[in-house]
Length: 153
Image (cartoon, rainbow, N blue to C red):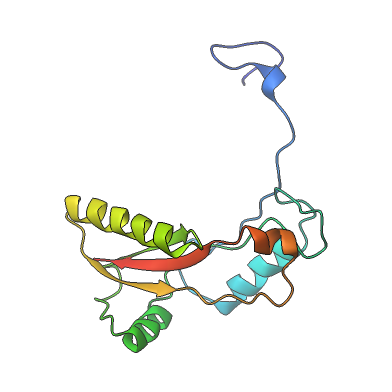
């Protein structure tokens, strides 16, 4: 057992401190279930501190949940955008946070496209992520990025 009261190698116990909370809900066989999402949201809602907290009641840390690729959802959404997705497991989805300023956003998208091409990746298309700003505080709104998903084969 590692003795934590003294320095060992690069470890220094004086750097120890309380960490922010984390919750974990998973099915080890990879089975999808709405119950897992419901349980994960319950965990998230009951964690008092998950990271940064805002000065307003309606500005928080943006914590959320991760889940398996919702292929059926993406497939339907992409059909509406004129994007044809390959079968499950044959593409990836990236989440991009762009500037609200159109010129900067398009410059960043161009850089991303060129980098993808250099790596031999095929960009299938982009999807603007819908957001609900109903109860988002002014501090969060002032720095909210333009969020898009990119689909890559």
